Image 1 (cartoon, one colour):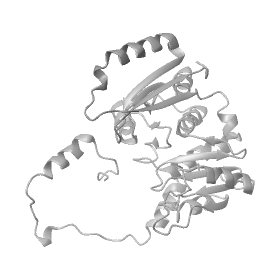
Image 2 (cartoon, helix red, strand yellow; image 1 turned 90 degrees about the horizontal axis):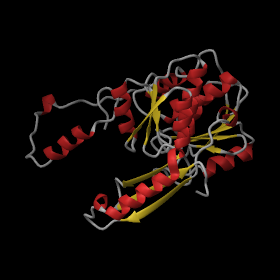
Image 3 (tube, helix red, strand yellow; image 1 turned 90 degrees about the vertical axis):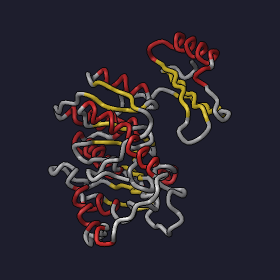
Image 4 (cartoon, helix red, strand yellow; image 1 turned 60 degrees about the vertical axis):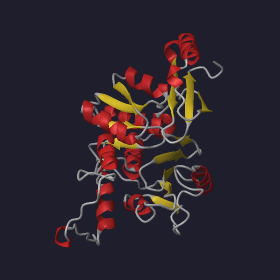
Length: 317
């Protein structure tokens, strides 16, 4: 669900709706029901909207781009956006049959994109997920870039144009290397709970524009009200075209920290926060790791699991 402003809804609103479900139903008469209407030119309008988020002085002419729409929402739009901006487009994952969304293609299965970029000798690969709000990108060497790296690149491109970027919002899972790289450039960094709507809440609270998470949900609030993989991809390609540099060149100073993630199954109702041994072990490890590493322990929002993550500059450590 989205609000009338095109934004995802806050937890408080969703909880209020859930509580209302227990109330007896109330019906309005048919004269007061809403009406649905079809926008016959919706696809064309949206394509133009996306193109207008790309620098009007720039073109993708001369670039070969593989576009993977995950057999999902972007299948009939994404290839045309890049084509109309001048690129030679090789579409994959653009043949939905009603059952194959996200199956073996798209941002959640990027191996297909990597293989296609290598096979066709493409300059870039762009993968959306099924509902087209997430982005993963691949360069000519077949190297995959996640949302953390793309977020940094979007910030760096604006700084290169002398735009002011007061702060950026990531999540609890955002790689520490990105946080340190942003702070080194004088950009504040705040972590939100995992989920792009929590990133949006933090952005609105601080009055900032850019945020995202490693899964590829990225927000640029001066371009759109919510995450949109196509808009994010165009921001990245704009940075590459304007600087005449590749993704690897633009991200040469950002080396992601190695991360180890373990899932520990919880018993129903188990209060892991009250475990004193866990607390003392965590404190001891944090003291050992110092300032260039971190420990993150959080409960999964979807499964009875405790997610234990440790990241450090040194992989062996």
